[in-house]
Image (cartoon, rainbow, N blue to C red):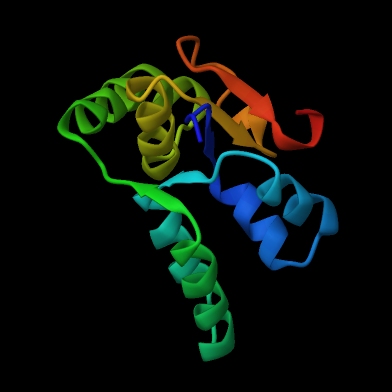
Length: 127
């Protein structure tokens, strides 16, 4: 499968919340995520059952590591957008990974990323 999309954590959370349209979207698109999303999902799992569901989901996905150029790009994005847009570091890392890997970031929180102009961005509900 050709990598076209990088899925943001929001898509995965919607799937884990049993939103059928999110599950259908996951089944019918590229399944690439950042390791940052893995950490965010683990952080959101507040019991063993949820953690097991996170592990099962993550095992079915292609997980991209944080590469040095994405780390630097994330810092650059923070410098540019933290004061004006309150860009969070983990969002910056996900965005930087999408930019460095030349992938479109798929999310339900486009406002968290819409000001990052080199980023290709799409709302998963509108793909």
